[in-house]
Image (tube, rainbow, N blue to C red; front, side, top):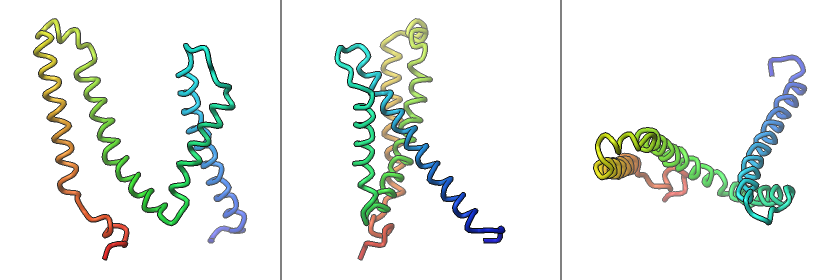
Length: 152
C-alpha cells in the first residue's frame, strides 16, 4: 500500500502466488506419474502416459475435496500436525537405522557375529520406537475441541 500503483503490485503478487501453486501441482503430479511408470517397467501392459497423469490428477482432486468444505482448516491442522510430528520423526528414525545398522552390516557380522548383531539391532530399534512414541504422546495430549474452538 505504500508503493506507487499498489493495484499493479497486488496483481503481480497474487499472480506469482498462482504460478507458484501451479508449479507445485506439476511437481507433485510428476513425482506420482514417474513412480507409477516405473512400477510397470518389466510388465507387458503399460498404460499410456496420459492415463497415468489422469489417474494422478484425479486422486489429487479427490484428496483436495477434504480441504474445500467448512472442516477444511481443521483437516489441514490435523494432517499438518501428524505429518510434522509422526512422519518426520519416523523418517529420521528410519534414516538413522539405515545408516547406522544396515549399511555395511556384513562387516559387523564378521567382527561380532550375525546373532549378536541382529539381537542388538532389533532390541535397540524397538526401544527407540517405544521411547519415541511415549515421549511424543504423553506431554502433548489435549482435547481437539479446545484447539478448534468446537468444545463445550
